[in-house]
Image (cartoon, rainbow, N blue to C red; front, top):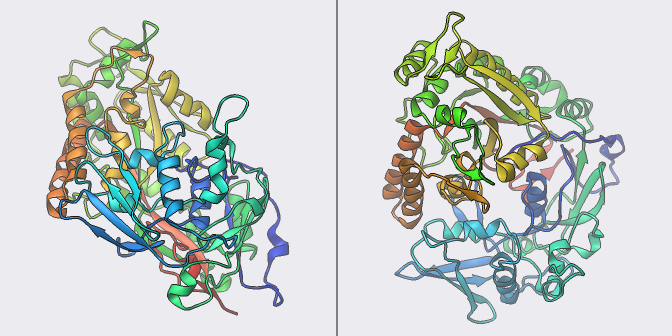
Length: 569
């Protein structure tokens, strides 16, 4: 989920160009990382830190979509597609000079990602098929490691891009427990850890971190790609992440020259920045539709907690009526949203798969704005209107619900306000409220006491990255969230079918056959509308022209190849 979290800003004026300094890059981020431990990371900033510090066996080229060698120089897949043998590059080292070996790979997977005592989000993408079986990882020799899976699994190669971690540093934390009986690893490499104690394998290591001020990265002297490319990489020796209190603050600092880039240009700032491109010596890059989805979703959970329904049974009947959800979708004016909220820098969204993914199906009609059609669907489902044109259900109850989203996002607030207004035109009373994100998470993950929420998810080329959302047993299956203390939960036939298709799609290795499977998924989810999609904004970023080598993409942003960028005078 993409969030805007307000924090105290600091002044980066002292970081402006100095001829005596090595090349350095200054950008803004909107929040502190929650952890420096990549296995535990789940928030965007912590994941971004991980990508600066750690490499996996493979990597993804966001321009071509190809899986490329990283710590592994090559791999061999068996004829039955159940074994993959990776060969590591020779003479790999960690940033402290210690050898990086196959033993680190074994430790990372067997002791960390596959350890059921560690809540590792990566483990979910390593689960294979209906059974959720995990891979077996074994050492072949000093440079080769074998992964064995239970059935063909198309996304598996890409999943091994997960960060490899240093056994010589972290093994003791798996062998020891704290006074509460928890593995010490769970509290290892927190944001309070001294930077010199965190070793890395990618282009950078942490130089310093000051909470609510800045995070500084410096070049890793043992970066493996230097030998592969034959150049001293990275060219940019220091990277400063300035923590700012808002997007408006970041905009001011960029315009004044304190930042080298705005990694996210909002629609409301685009026109202003576009006029200043020449004077400010920067370029605004447009990567087309962003990878991700914005949507509203109703709580379809019909289960009970402690004998009490998690959703008011009256509302639950509305939400679980597909005509109701389709009517809501027809009543939302997405073109108006594109024009007013996104200043024309976006397009209506119709699918759960990113439009730039090769698996996107462009034959969906979607739900173009049609309030007349919306009312027809409601009347056909047994709803009626009173003299005030308020929508009533079969028992005379006024149709009204609460729409929540997280605080701190002006864009989300504008969207929520418009939805409240749009649905009011078909007689539905919407109470739009923003709440603190942690409170929102508590509702979706624990108490389950919510009506409707407005969210945005990130996306990728690989549809299986959304398996947790679409599997009825998935930890992110929010519209009908499973829970241990829940009874009477009902899984609809279409819901089970989407989950089955996701498993089938992951099992299929032929790309054209995979596309056909995910086309079925998109058609079914578009018809049943567990998620009602809204608008996909364009991916925009502004970068100073003295930064050479930018290959911008919506998937990778401006700095996916940061290690090879150069700063010129």
